[in-house]
Image (cartoon, rainbow, N blue to C red):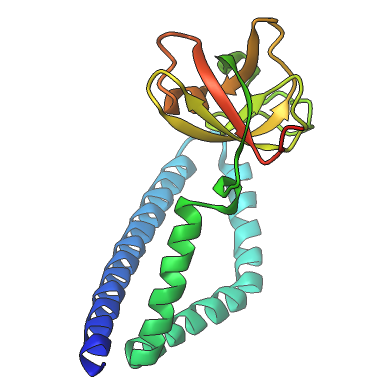
Length: 217
């Protein structure tokens, strides 16, 4: 049993080292971005004709920064304290590893992907994209580039749907947030990103199976 715990502790330690390494990379990326932004902002200050607004913005941030500094100091002090505590404790490393694995699992396979799934409909799907970006959908949501959404004439708005491309077996999970398609021979209008995941951009349409949590009567 002690041998098993040693293996677990080694895995937890390796995971913790990886997290610290990632933390260091993010820290240097943050410093690099801040340096670039400072250099750009300083360069803008040298442009003629914008000295007044430039000075006003600078004065605003000089007044604003002390008010929020204490909040940032509190957050970073506690963050450093937590990192130090976990580094010194095997039990905390184990707990951290379990929590991290659960978070990653939820990120890769969130509750919206969980079953049971019931076959709702089979038919032709198309996709819509650029011309509809930033416009309101039937649900009231804004249609953002890269969203995994779809339009259906019959499914309730807000429904999670699992869509499978019959030809290649590719799967995508989408939220129904709009009404359509308005071509009678089609059953679903996917966002461009969802269509890319199904590898149907070139063809424009694809035969799909739609699965939902709604059980057919």
